[in-house]
Length: 153
Length: 153
Image (cartoon, rainbow over all chains, first blue to last red; front, side, top):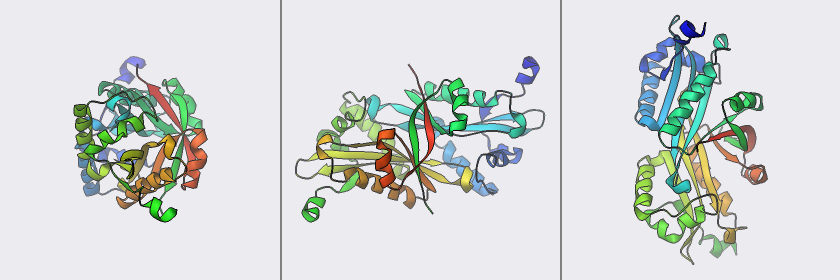
């Protein structure tokens, strides 16, 4: 099972054509994400792509259905502390509800973590709910601080 | 006291010349930050500046001593969720141990939060220790999630 099925779930970088493969609908499983027009998508895709390795969004496409079933992002923050160190910030991890149990979340986290390491980050961080803590611990993360938020209305 | 003293502690954006005003020494009160060469500083300053409004570091200079006594940063993450929304990430807040009690931390947070709002973010977030939670609550923040971290060795 692992052999042939594994090949159907490769992690790769987001492409423009993924909009028509259910990428936005997948994000809607995570949080508020109304319909995005083709132009809005292209503009945002261009803004993020222009950052190169400093902002990477990855996806898993199910080769059989042609649908995007998992995604996540990491952007690289450049600091002065830690001797002009860099930190990877992982954001917007989501796995399709119908594609759970295939380790896709772990694959996504591994891809993003490897990317952060490869560009020289000294650490990678993310914020999650208490319910998802155990999953990230399995991925090698440890709880450190608390996240504070202020919403603008 | 508030009138004349207040003018000595204006928040402004980081400038190249702040390296010679104790900016790195101030960061050393926050975490590991060995000496940074002039070239390393200039290179990193240039990288961050090239992002314009998408990565802003601010400082407070004590006009009497010519020393940087407080700093903080915010960078703007561009997303697809929330209708191609933007999030401000606040990082590396530090107030000189000798300059506490003058609301400089609040001024820094206010400057960075106002910046995030002005560029269209729907929220601003930060990670902090449990001990600093009350301070950020006074700044209008609420605890939401937990921060997970993975260090590279």
